Length: 381
View 1 (spheres, helix red, strand yellow):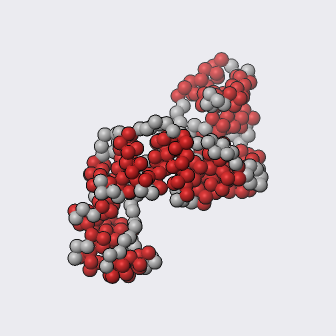
View 2 (cartoon, rainbow, N blue to C red; view 1 turned 30 degrees about the horizontal axis):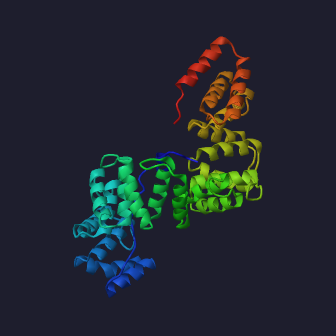
């Protein structure tokens, strides 16, 4: 599993709440139409109210212009409506306006301005604003980076039931970023977010069950959570589900099903899936055997720094399979693989070193020097 906060969060997930609470008949009818995806009717009902200054209707018009629902898509028009409602102190509009500044949609991108509007919404108790302000503090965008302050806002939003905040809080608790490290509490928040359908949290819960991390070890339970995340397009969930099918753990062993999920993850750039997919193509398991496809996926993963892919690619260069035999390239790849295996991966590292030493025996001094130079100059993409 990815352990760093940045890897887990990637970038600030800007959440724009769309919870509707009607208070008058036209507003209620517009809300019902919006919920039924009858956006043209919602726009017709809300526009007169928005023109009269109703903040709920103005925010609804902003939402529809932002998404192109029932009206032509127009970010500037969305900003105009959000600003009108935000200036009245309407929390949801303040958060939405902040999101537009954060993304640079309809306005010049301005993280400081985004953080200002997030704070105004957050201080009124808006869960999405609290989550987004927490993310801004965590990443230091628009204000001074402060992980402890980020955790404070994540926790407020998490307590308000915000699934992204629950996930972000869990990541901070797992890594000890801005808060004391507490894996048991992290697990609780991952589960709460997962039960709300958060795909990344579902993958984390699946990982806990696969490895028995403070929960009873259970491959079927892991598969259940990975599948839920994978169905929502989460690349790591797809990769982990494919790995279970590859090994027949918690699910029937099925190379074809493994290949299906690994391909979906690999196409999203998931490094482990790319490496494993290369193996399937090389061996013709679940897919037609193809050295060209094996090379393509090994290279994709190797370029990102996968130790397994670097080693497997090196083996192809040793034997000249799908490529011109090249001991210098093979030595470089084995060296890189050995350096990139974790301290706990002793067996894999020793195997890469042995591969390098065997190919070195076939090389002269100048070739080894050239290979070492290439390895020292290599950087992952």
